Structures are given as C-alpha cells and as structure tokens.
Image 1 (cartoon, helix red, strand yellow):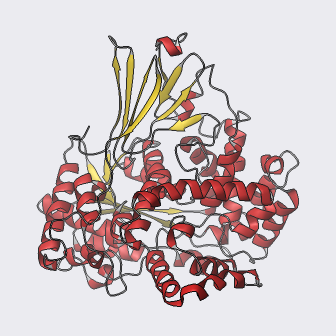
Image 2 (cartoon, rainbow, N blue to C red; image 1 turned 90 degrees about the horizontal axis):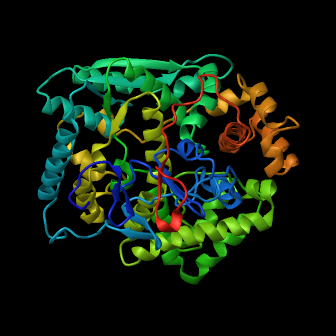
Image 3 (cartoon, rainbow, N blue to C red; image 1 turned 90 degrees about the vertical axis):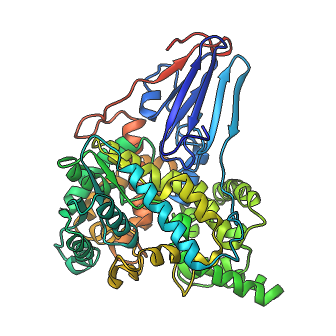
Length: 542
C-alpha cells in the first residue's frame, strides 16, 4: 500500500485464511462503503449497491442528519444511513472470524523537510515545481483523450500550463461552466460567471476550449439526478454545474484533470488568514478575549456573531472547516437545543481528535490538517468523484499526489501564506507562466447564483418542495422554522442560500432513498455489492 501512488480503493480476499482486506487511498479520492450485518459483511463503492442486499436496512441516522445541517455533508465514518459506514482515507480494514480490524497506513508529517527553515525560497520553489510537473506527467498517462476543467482560477490554470508544457504545445481540450443570465437577477447571475478568465487562459495556451451555460431550469431538473448519484445528502450546489461540465467533457474526452486539493494543502482559502488574524488578536488580548462571545448575543448578523464566538476561543475549539453549513440560530429553530447540543458534542469529538493529532504544529497547519481529514474527502473529493463518474468521466487530481502533498505539508508557513495571499509557493512557481490577472486573482471558489434562482425563477419550486403536507423535512424538523426560512429566502432577507439548499437536498434524498422515487433519467447504474462469507459472518456468499 505504501508503494502505491495515485487514487485507489481495493479489496483482497484471502481464501485460505478467510480474511478480507479493504484499503482506501491516502487522501480519500475514491470511496469505500460497508455494512456489517449479524451474519454477513457487504461492501461497495456506492451505497446504492449495498442497498440491493436484502439484509441492509434503509434507516436515517439522526445524528448524521444533524451533523449534515452543521457542515452541509456527513463526516466519516458515518453516512446518512444508520449502520452504513465509510472506510476512512489512508486506512485499511480486515474482516475475518474475529470481526473487523482497522489500521492507518499514512498520515501528514508537518515541518518535515530537512533544514526547511534554512533552505532558500528559490530552492523550495524549484523542488515544488519539479514535483508538480512530475505529478501532472504521471496523470497524463492514458490511452484515451484527456482534458482539463478550467475555471480561470490559479489552480486550474496551473494544470493547463503544465499540461501544455508536457505535451509540447499540443492543443489541450478545456471545459468551463457558467450560468445563463436572465430574469430579475440577470446582473447578479452574470457576475457569477468566470468565462472571461477561462477564455483568457485558454487563449494564452492555445487550448481547444468548450463552455456550457446552465439555466435555472437545468439546475432544478438536475437535483434528483445529483442526489441519486451522490447516495447521501451533500448540500454543495456546485455538484450540479460539475455534473453538467462533466457531461460536456464526455462528448470530447474520457479523462480530465482538475485543480482540487491546492487550497487544502497550501492554504488557499481566505478564511485561513481571517482565522489566523482572530487567533493573533485573541492571544494579544489575553483573558479579556473570553468576553468576545458575550457580544454574540446582540442582534447582529450570523457572520459577525460567528467571528465574535471564534475570537474568544482557541482555533481547535471553534474551527470546523472552510464551509458554512446552516447557521447555529437556524439549527436551533429547526431541531431544538437538545439536538444542537448533541450535534456540537459530536463535532467536538470529530475535530478534536484530528486537532490532537497535530497539537504541536502551527495554527495554520492544524486547520489544514482538519480540512484534509474532513472537508476534503467528505465534500470536495466525494462530489468530484460522484459527479464525474456519473457521466463516465475519470477525474484525476495532480495536486493530491501524495509526494507533492507530503512536500507541501513539510513547507514552512511562509511558503504557504505571505503578503496576505495563500498558495504563495504555487504563485511563485507559476510566476513566469501565468499572466498577473490570473496569478493574483482574488479567490472566488465556485460562485453560484442559487440565491437569485431560489428567490425568483425557482420560488414556487422551493415552496412546493418544502411546504407540502407530506414533506420529509416536516417529519424531521420544526414546521414553523421551515416556513420562516422559505419566507425569508423569498424576501431576500437570508444571507445566501445554504438553509434552503440544505433542506431541498435532504428532501429529495429522502424521497428517493427512503420512499423509492426514481429520478427522471432513471436510476443511476448500480454496481453489485460484494459480500463475503467468513465464520463470523456466515450465511451470504459473494
């Protein structure tokens, strides 16, 4: 396992010992799910496959549901299905007559580059560029056409630059997705598009560029398809544009490279710098900093309240990842204080374990480690794998080659964050290749006009989905709280769209997986589950 390089998930059956070995790749690019029954064990790469086994029940895990509201995804090893679990990244497990055994074979090692503090920036940048080029070169090995998802941001542009260099100027096929600007919020929708940046980079490298414009109707119709392929709720709306860009790419290529992983390994998100500034202020204020959370009781915006709570506590006590789930106040209204307290305790256990693993490294690396263990495999990589595989496209992520990841982890903080910019070493490595307009672009993530769509074009769709008498959300959450969320969204008084989107995704997931609704495109292709027969799990053969 330690000699493997790239993405993988595999099983080995030892017939003589009657022992099953399951392994998942280091970063969690590929998923592995399993269910242990009283007399059988079944595993697969999709939860839908497990559900084909007559002994696997369909039951909502209530703790997972509350974690989903807080994070917008379910952190492993849990899934939204009770007693169906994920094998964690960088881990193996065995199943035999003695039961199940788990082990970890890989982890991050921070500050591990020999004499890193003494090595010059030039030397560190040169080695980083060499490893990045090696990683891209390895992922260009294929017997089918390749391309790259191109947003015009730093990460995807770096992928195109490297591919063009390695292929000797061969025209690389590039793919971008954006939105059709129409209706009352046309200007807001157009502002979410990044076509101009993608076109600029594509033109610089002579790429064969392709674009897809998504409409509100496309977005609405794709929700049940997205839910079907994801297997469990994930309230990340960028799954849908990723699905459409993958469909576009499949008309031209079979393998695509993308820039996932650069932000989580080289501190690309703005939030990291904000949290470091808050932590610095907390340490300077000393005991007085404990008073900051008290001000969060005043009638302020959820964002300001969040920063006040963070300013009064250590990073490990409040940092729960780069994404924003449903706000605390809204969760209280939806589920009540007892469920919120249990959920927060569960979050403390999950993130606390990871923070303890790296308690002696820098505050920046502690955040990067937590995100690499939770957000990266459970949201970013999961949606990337599921949405591309849904269209028969293989996604490869060069920034997550484990040798490059290990190198980035060992870099001094100054090589990740400097001059109020993240991914500093990547910017330097690409400094003579990419234009300044791309090199120093402010990070936008993957902008989505969902807020405008929910308020205007999809207003009736939201109301009809969430406020009907047989709505699943009404079964699990407070009705008045749901009505309040829908009304606030219609009035433009909610900051964003996360509350409505989280409820919509759960609603469609429950309809499909608990009530048997089949999406318009028919059920996604279901792999057959694999079952093993050992003395402790006798009764069902493979």
